[in-house]
Image (cartoon, rainbow, N blue to C red; front, side):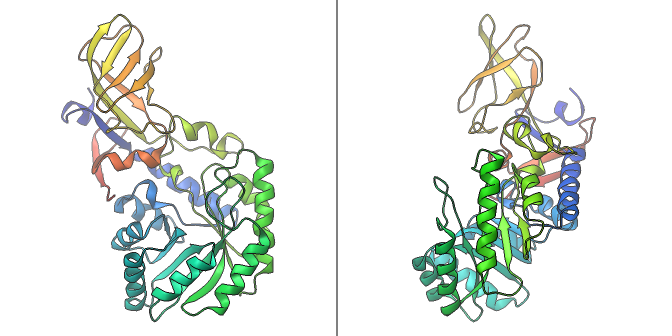
Length: 352
């Protein structure tokens, strides 16, 4: 086995340095080239080392999903954070209010989609207001007001309330399934921004599947457009390989995560039990992808993966690509970063 693979125990997930840096630079260049800001979603990796690389590449800030994640990335040194969610937890809001009061340079934005949610923010605000992005959702989606009129009404409510400040509008297009649906949704977001009575509004959109459409459709919008894409940072060999906008536009992202494990048993002809399980690699948006041709993963269990194929022997080492980076990093506290020869370059830590 090459490099560290012969010195560290398996199973083992590694990060390919060249692919990681390429992906960070590629998305930074895409954002710059389309007049967009990028606030990468740190929930993907929750790694100070990766966050530092993204910020060094020009990221506008970092996005997170919860107040706990916000607290963690503040520890990474983030000066601007978008909590892409409604925050109603009193303990989390108390910490956020104290952090805003303690650091005048800290910029925090969070979502709201109801008067009840705004009222909760108001009750827990400190000396500095919570800056609010009113969320516009879509039918069958996640949170968010379901019409532009609701957004406009809630924006007015925010502007009349104490302890909060209207900063703009936010949405999430990642669960839509066609470019036509995305264009229609982005049009509603544009309408919502145009109805706001706020200077220099922010329009934040997220996801790693439709940023090419976002770059085209929102180019003329009179707002700061902030992308919250996250999975691009390590890409994958499954879900996002099939869905990345770079299947439609020039450029590419490269899979940066690879997992290695031993064949433990061959209990039947053409069936191998591999020492790789749900605790080691993601399985929610597709099973691991064997690098060796002719092999197929058919089932994943807590500590085992069942592979179908010929020519395997007990003790063989198999390499796999992964599907869905957002549920890969949380399975490891330390990940080796390797060069093309699988020699150790550095390590990445995660803080979930």
